[in-house]
Picture 1 (cartoon, rainbow, N blue to C red):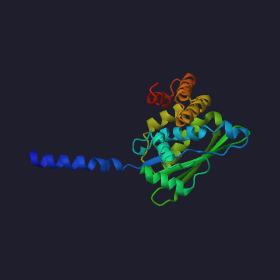
Picture 2: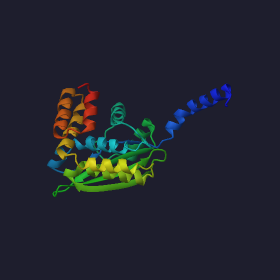
Picture 3: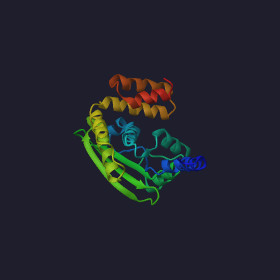
Length: 230
């Protein structure tokens, strides 16, 4: 039997190491996406800059082997530092935000569409310590399948960065769920995020509720309403 004093010492060492163990997980954060659509589509698809950021954040967070920073925390840093992400994010901005957030990997990207209704989603992941691009990837799908497109890109990022594997059963379930989310719900949700960040609470609440009218199982919309006390 372990002596009481030795047991107490062992327990103390475990507790002291717990924060370090938690910080040993690979950490990831996602910046708003650059809207590369042209003409009228640029204005129409503008809300997706934050919508895609949020969806990708949530899809990456399915992996319990990593720590993913919530979109709200990223937005707080952007607001505090008065950093604009309206254009393509450069290395300096990505690394600066990554260091302020204390993450290992900073995800940036953009999207463009064509006349046939296809969307191309491109991603660059920066290593915050070195400032170098450690993994680029992309995906393409019909804009109606936007949620599924983001889900597939999340999987590529996870594999490309050699992050801990997502349990197959969980990954398959998320992939099937992503295929069911209608584009109209994604757009309403994206507009709601923009209203929220602009301090327009009533508008955001109304849009999140409209999102759930289109897709009652949209868990992220439910979580946002809870945050807003609605």
